[in-house]
Length: 314
Image (cartoon, rainbow, N blue to C red):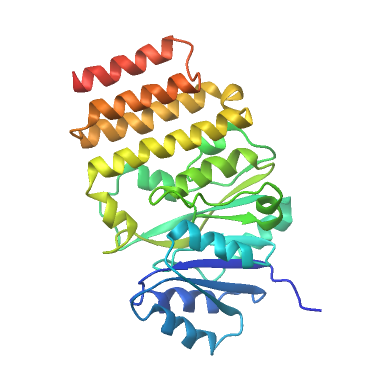
């Protein structure tokens, strides 16, 4: 009988030949031995696939899925379909992890039966004056939620927007049919997090910094979309519609309307204020339509939101 791995690490691989070895070696050196490493080659055009094969020859725990390019979400879903571990960890191959990362993830899962274990991350190269959202997103505290509460998503440091600073119970993901939205080219992490978190029964935050996050990589999706403000913001608004529709259908929007709407307005408003795109008026119309379609506000909060948008853009 084949022993089931305790942790499955899924790597969506696309043109990362300069970083993949570092990532794989950090996984091969884990203190927890009962892991599997699933590299999903998403149609790479560089030497990424060859590098992965070289490491497969060195460690039997490494396996490869070779597929046509379909995007990060598609690659992660392919890895999830093949994964057998009790816990699932989606790791970007330009990042790497501490030696005890998988061990700590599994320990916390065993200790409280957590559906989700969320941990801290260290950015590299070092950022002299990091933005507040980076510090908030990468720094975690020791907190346990025996059931989902909005604070776990909206107010707890590390609660969103990243997928690579947490691991998930495989049974939890499979039972609830939770997968990455493949129709989204950018921002699929946030959509996935907002679908997964409110479905969880037990969420464990730990202060351990188990992950190392490469802040900028040329050719990454963040690089591709980061400077294209209008395109990025249009995608953000589309993603917000998907998230809001999910929350509406599941009854979460009715149950937690106030914190969700406050976050929604802040998320979109921050984009508009910081980037000031030329298509702002059209984006505002689309945002208001989302609010109308899903009955997000009873009037007062919506008026405040409209006033805030109009004040910025006249």
